[in-house]
Length: 200
Image (tube, rainbow, N blue to C red; front, top):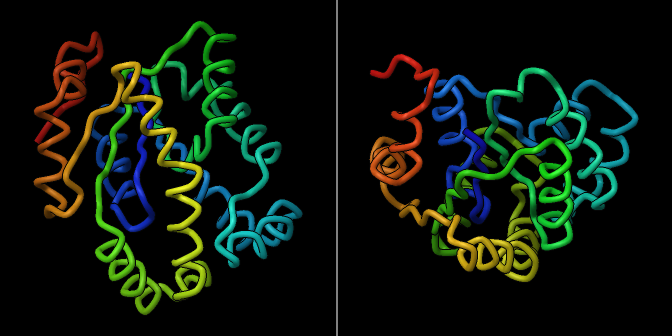
């Protein structure tokens, strides 16, 4: 199954993507995790993206698209994947469509985690206190949400227009949000998979 998750920061996309990845036995490909890992390891990529992320801006397309293309080409992604943090704008969505077309793949669904800005802001401020992430400072949060509405929200509408968007109420508790996905066509496709994973 080939999935991607969309929604504002703080909507719980990463948490839900990790649950889905385990449940369906597919890799969780998170651009945010890749960037933060590069920063922690002192890699050149980390030095490039650290000030960008701290300011709440998007990492340039050429960097992000290259990373995603490399990950989708790995053998671990042949049985499926769940993309988290990409695409964040329409050019990236077009690049993803091109990448998938080159390897004869397509998206099965796009999970859209709908969350009001005030709830997203409160969650990210709480996360900042808990984890100390520089990109969860108030000014950066406001900038990230503004960027989301300007650049990423149109991506969700694009996928809605072609019938791939699966809206989820991200204000609900984690188990309830996950259950919404399981009741959607995503869950039905997973149950019909040729290689179903054990569920609890």
